[in-house]
Image 1: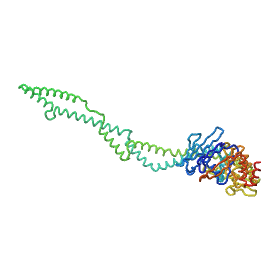
Image 2 (image 1 turned 180 degrees about the horizontal axis):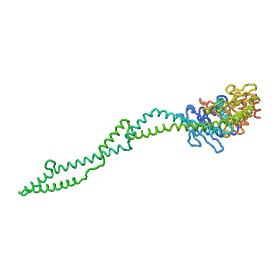
Image 3 (image 1 turned 120 degrees about the vertical axis):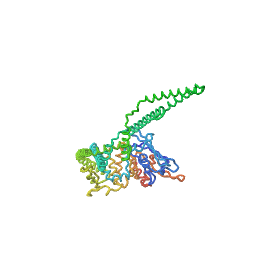
Image 4 (image 1 turned 45 degrees about the vertical axis):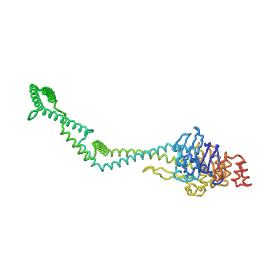
Length: 532
């Protein structure tokens, strides 16, 4: 149940605190005082949107917070609306949370019955949901939904296969031609880099061989004397000049002899060098690189991209070969699922009709207790609803005959606002899936009066025995049944308007009931009678 609600700086509310009791909590006040806005603030806390203009002028932010007492512990919610940006922040037990985390909680916390809920009641989808909620074996519905989801997934897979098959079939000739071109050359991963390295190695070896041969020719000569012959001749001349008394020539002869010996040693080393053998046929390497280059130009791709293309082509052609088998497999799976779904729907339809009949009878009983005639009838009507080609489930809606002798018609054609309010109250009395939820009735008494109003009050009191209730009403007959009474008023102070909320004591409650009854002596008499 909702124990505490605080609203600050929201529209006309500066700072308002409400502590609720179990049973009926009633909000009363003049039209326009702001009763429904308190419920709007509660809706904002539970996920509804409000614009930045809802922040009270002069305030940086608006804030709504509440304490809910649940079976598994207390829950504190707080939501803030920032005036500057219009963004909001939600806190659950003082931890910043997302709106998604609140969606599952909302139906457990409140059940809102208002004019908006009346419009929802008129929607065929909502009425169909009522019959689904009343279904006695929900596991069958879950299985039905699972089978439909599987069929849809199969259909998506089948459509994707067919779309791909059609696209590839148009390109098959191109793919096969590209595959032939690639297979003719048969490139290997890393082959281009390996061949370029071999070519560079062979060219380096050939260059070294040519340099060695050239060096030997310079040392020994080819058609004439080489460097060693010239040094030997120079050495003899220098020795002769040294014998004739030229000391410098003798030193030159020694230097020439040393150089000649060094060069002779170098010549020996060059001759002993093994022949260059790289095991690489440079011509074949160049021919292979040329073929690879031609393939790259034709396909306008790098070699790694060509290798990837070949894998893609092989995979696509293989897909085309086996696609028919996959489609055949999916067809068989679909046939089995369709058969299973058909069998399941055949079980669901009579069970739903039986449960809908019981729901209709229970609604009739509730409506009679709310002032409708003993002859009022609620009739479930079912129309075929295609779950899958060839498989029809049923979708139900409510037909209503409020008076004897009238043909049953859809609610949206014949129900008035007051009748819809009582219809919602009748449904609320049948719901058992929201035991913790606080019921909120926003002018559920609209269009109701006379003796019917007393029956409506009795039903609200009975419902309040198991559910906490927030009730907005203009009727003293309903307000007098509340366990806690709040008066909502609007005041102007210093040229500013404020919405106020005051919990009423016994005397304040008597005065408010008298006002609601019209005031004066008559109002006082009504208030006294109701309180007695």
